[in-house]
Length: 450
Image 1: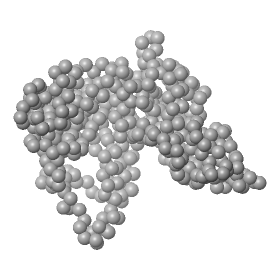
Image 2: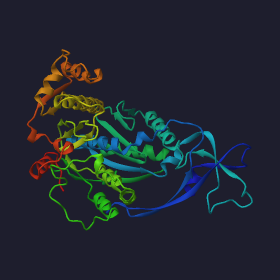
Image 3: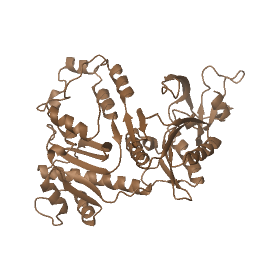
Image 4: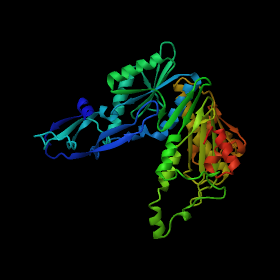
């Protein structure tokens, strides 16, 4: 409440005729700290229950954790390569800093109703947690502040900012909701940015970065390496699904096992039983996890599992991009169309990977890191030939035209597609079940330590 009053979040007014009132509630949470850095804290947050009736663009995708994982890993790669200083800041009550552009009326918070003004409501002047406008308004204010202090916003991601100093060095800032990472060659530059931010926002200085988005960050500067660990996160996942006492198995899936809709619950009893099994939550929690160690050199790997979907016969697309032996970006998803051969399936995944390679190359280039020509490895020689063949043949004319843009990219020299032995293709573990020896080999290639 002190933060809300200090921020002048609302004015108490009588409700105008014809206006609706948004309800609110208190949300209480214990926030786990970081050992040696931050003690556990008990937090109370006032949350608006419901959104404004005025339609607005949803900016929540700006803070997508899936996208930000790739950006954080990319930034850590730059930090490790150039031995930069890296520190972390937290914005207190971030969403309360945004200025609202429309009138929203909210009931007075429980336990803090003003005497003799019980019939009054809160006319919100600043954004509040729970409002759909809050992420957008907070981001707009932060963006305005950063650009006014000579930082440039990345054209490849709206939450990456950078500034070039007189001596040619760079300062990088990455924002994720209320968490910030600041990297620079000199600690003095980081202190300067911190001071500027503290003048505008109420900040909490976490100093050397230890943890962000559930990833624990360990650093060995003597050998110029950064290590990412999600040991704590995985322990939480195991406890959440009552698996903390489970015994490990050598491989997650047998090579002959394939999923299809025929395995879904059929009878009413099966449907009722599975409604209490958090299958999708488990899968989502596992997909969120990642490991690795960060060094240098960006390389891409692609693979496809032809007609792997037993229900609709669509192929599975998979790609991974690494810096050294650390995966910084990856994807595994069903293709949108049915392909007629393994070559076509591999050709389409090369196209998807080239789009990601162009984005990564552009991002690194903007951050003063020249990746030169990106290399994408594929284990299908026929698919590689197809990417270099500028002629349109009977066997390829049915493929959507937009997939063929990869030919121009390769002909121009922006991307190089090279052959790799199937045994060395680490994406195999994302597109199909593998024998234990190959599975462990793929984990080793991507730098995973379990």
